[in-house]
Image (cartoon, rainbow, N blue to C red; front, side):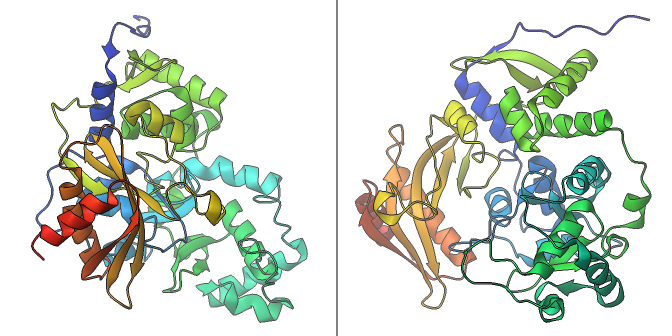
Length: 411
């Protein structure tokens, strides 16, 4: 038998080539469908691998934004359809990156995480009351699907108010633990974004639950393989971050992928560490993107990668005191072509039908028509979130040109 070939290190990529490979891997060169369908959603999720979930709704929910960026304006009911039912369900929530929608076929690969959560008594040391677990699990089995709020009065205590963001009731803590270890699963969410829990056999397709459990090494290999495919080209740290894996396990899986020829080690100009290229990745001549990105989009969620690819220093400032914010509360990058050309602070006032832009800031390398291109994108985004006009504030060097572009553009 011929031994597997060793890693090839002959290829050197420019930063521009790495950017275009990365954006193509994420779906930004896919031909748009005339109207987004479930097939469009399937293709987008095949590119991103996961959709990070976050409760902030200043503009649009975090898990909706990557789909918008790749599909254009779409009906959120498409995602609800993909993440509901058990027989035809495509997506389910779990700790795949952080809290995220993931394809249901990744459920077996997450077995070892569920085992680890059980060994460590859940996530973040939230202090779930073990004595309540049988009672909560029995309630889900008998009455599910249900929310934590529906159980709070029965658990003897309701949600406290003193610590924003961590003020979970005992019912919610126990349910979160049971979800982390796989005794319950997330069946969906209410209109108020509350999690709805049910038994896994009533949430996931039977074929998924019947699938064989991979070994830890097999699961790690599959996750790294998917991360390489979604990133196109990346260093070890970015690959480990994608599914929140240990760096050592990521390196071990990369060695296997190098041996099988699925991955090639390359050099990217300006990067201090080796990079790994999906051998099936495309290098397009150009990328014609024009869209807003969520702070939790895979293109920018690993901030060191965003800097290495785009020369784009990005920090979300939601938790930064107002007087210390540089760009604003909920700032979205603006992807134009293959560069992040600007960033905008957005707030949708749906009652008034206004998409507010308190601040707009151009990057140093932004092309001359950035304001006009951003104006067109903001009109599209405003319509998607139910707003019929855009109002620009005074903050940022792009605010004036953007306001002028919006005024001059046809309504």
